[in-house]
Image 1: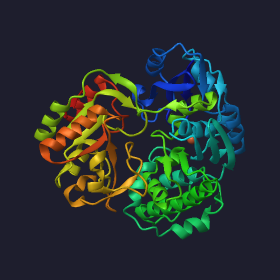
Image 2 (image 1 turned 90 degrees about the vertical axis):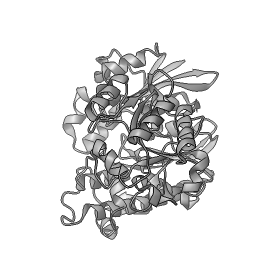
Image 3 (image 1 turned 90 degrees about the horizontal axis):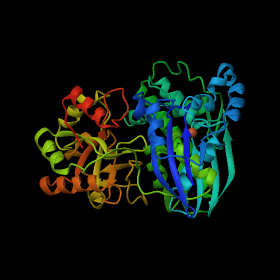
Amino acid sequence: MRILGINCMNHDAAMAVVEFTDGKGEILWAAHSERYSKVKNDHYLNWAIVNEANTYGPFDKVVYYEKPWLKKTRQLYAGQYSTALSYTELPQWHLDHFNIKIDEYVKHHDSHAAAGYFTSPFTDATILTVDAIGEWDTVSISTADKIWIERQETIQYPHSLGILYSAFTHRCGLKPAEEEYILMGMAAYGEPKYKHDIYDDFVHQSPFKLKQNLHKGLGDWWPNAHVYDLAASIQAVTEECLADLWRRASRYGSRNLVYAGGVALNCAANRVLANMGLFDNIWIIPNPGDAGSSLGCIAAHEKKFIDWQHPFLGHNIDGEYPVDSLIKELKENKMVGVASGRAEFGPRALGNRSLLADPRGQDIKDLVNSIKKRQKFRPFAPAILEEDVNDYFELPKGVKNTPYMQYTAACTAGKDFPAIIHHDNTSRVQTVRKTDNPGFHALLTEWKRQTGCPILLNTSLNIKGQPIVNDRADGKAFTNKYGVKVLG
Ligand SMILES: [Fe+2]
């Protein structure tokens, strides 16, 4: 049984192929549309990604990640009449261009829940999904045992923690539904001065409710406020509202939490979650947002576990991981790109499509920023061998590793590595195991052996404004634009 899962007509279209044999799924391939069209956060599919998906076909079934007619009822309620009444806004209309026929539709939050649970190592779990909006649902809590998922609680539009956060993203001059991670980074520089005003004007914390519909934004709320303080305020409110949801989830009794939906990408909040100690084990799939639902809808429909090994599931660039030549470049030029093996499925570059740099010294942040051309306040992420992580970072309570950069951790050697340290002395750390990525693991091992430094700065390999490099041609374009070698 080979199944194609699709998410499109949203902010990050994606496709996934899973084969089921003997009751268990194997992910053959999963990828983001943007990496093929070169349009960041592409809403639509394109022939390049469809053609690559078809190399894993033919498919016994095609599953779609949400229910478009149900979504239209919410759009009508929200007054989005032209979208709701347009036939061209239906996914099948879009997929007709590629001769793809959808066989089954799965509810949006059921796709999120299944993406998390069926890739987790748990048999019993409580599943919490939190995002901006699906069809109507914005939060769900379910219990799961064996293959059975039972929805226990739901919060619906317009009461949405994700929409609240996106409204502040927009208020702070960033792009909503895309740049929430930048807002999270800004929060470390501000004071939560407006927290009580947010509660007064917008939010009822427990049970979570919005006092007004924020789908169209906040307008010019507190026009003279510094955006860093607004960011710190909304991050604090979000963490407090999430804490209430995490506590509610913990009352269902399982010691295992599966946490999914786009809000689960907030790694500062995830640290708070872990430190609360409500659960013994937490599983967050590395692609918990809508793109990951291309995989989740397959799992939700089949109700079968999928063997999760690692997130290197996309386009393949053949060849050995170029350890020696990468080290030579790092030593000579402090910085090098790598595009090798299969691309990451998820928003983070984890070693196969990465810009790597020597993290030591005061000038490295500016050097990498001169290439990335991003806001100066934003630090870069460190990658470190899993066995060394406790010597340099304090991982949140109960977290033994963080191979997908899902948690921030306090750095205990910050002065030696200023480029990877946030203003609040935390880092969004990636721990690297051989089983996840043998090539990247070998690179870090050899880097440490030759230099004594166990850390590499790891940031996504992309030309400013474009998606992460996917194929060899993208790697060449990066070198031509910035003069930084891309090996692989
Ligand atoms: Fe979602």
